[in-house]
Amino acid sequence: SAVISQKPSRDICQRGTSLTIQCQVDSQVTMMFWYRQQPGQSLTLIATANQGSEATYESGFVIDKFPISRPNLTFSTLTVSNMSPEDSSIYLCSVREGAFFGQGTRLTVV
Amino acid sequence: AQTVTQSQPEMSVQEAETVTLSCTYDTSESDYYLFWYKQPPSRQMILVIRQEAYKQQNATENRFSVNFQKAAKSFSLKISDSQLGDAAMYFCAYRDTQGGSEKLVFGKGTKLTVNP
Image 1: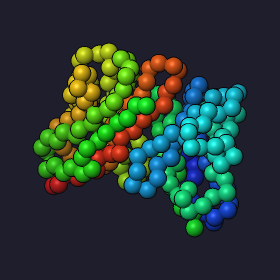
Image 2: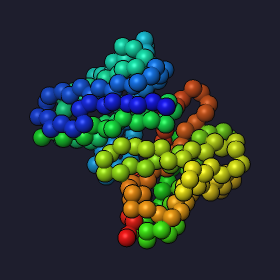
Image 3: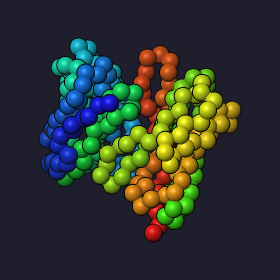
Image 4: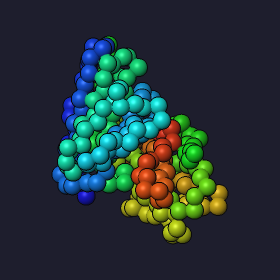
């Protein structure tokens, strides 16, 4: 099993600013996944983060907008940069082949 | 590309009764995983049940069971003896086993209401 602590749980941000979301896992994992869930929608994978290498981004997502760090096998961060209202979503991290998700970060950009 | 379709945006069930949520998917792969997730208002995604495509036996977890029809590419979730705590969004998801990708592809979800 794995327990994921995701922070912050929610935030309201001004447009043009950046927010960094953290996920801490209680055990070592090879891959961590970052998903976005836009209001009323399903989840879409943003990127896959492996420790010690560049994250792999899905089509439509770029590193300049969503930089990811993966400094060790238990921790990762996702930054949402230069935010606009369209970035208002729930952001979730996941490990272990989708078996475990963080609690999600509800981001509102005003 | 793989796709997952949930044709029921909303469903309702009486407490203690049984409800079935539908999911179909499209893939050219022969081996893959299928999942059902529950997302209550707390936003937490909770894995309910998982099915491996090469296993013919339908997965079961307590009151939750699936009807996996590989040829029809159908993967429905049956909730028996529904409880008020089952009310949530339910998402069906697909994952390849090939190529090292662990990417999940999600359906649009079904909102389940449980009536007392």
